[in-house]
Length: 127
Image (tube, rainbow, N blue to C red; front, side, top):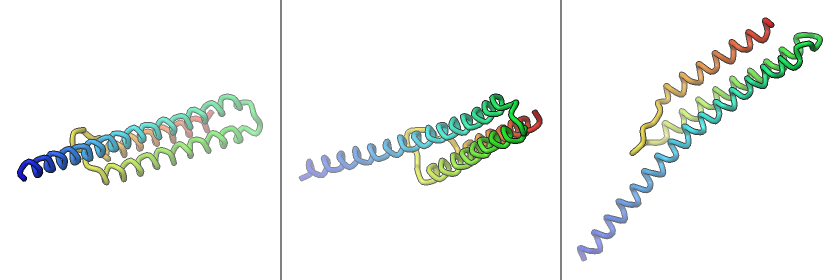
């Protein structure tokens, strides 16, 4: 009888370990997703710069600037969504064998990228 309960305890321990590792993988996937969203926001900024450069000679001059601004605004929304969703995911999960990024780091990165996007928008309008 003792043998059966030992096997059951070992199986329970293995199941708990697998669950902990799955939660760690989910945490790391959340961080990779945040990085993907940030890259997407940076791509929107690159599109804004490219549109402004390609349509520089367009008349009236405010049209290419306005179109570029739309992409800058999209980048700002992407940065906000990345921060918000990643922070929510991190609060729901616990790490076991991995070291997680802090939600403050997500906020700091999203803020810096957003300030950079707004600076690019300002520069585009002065050109």
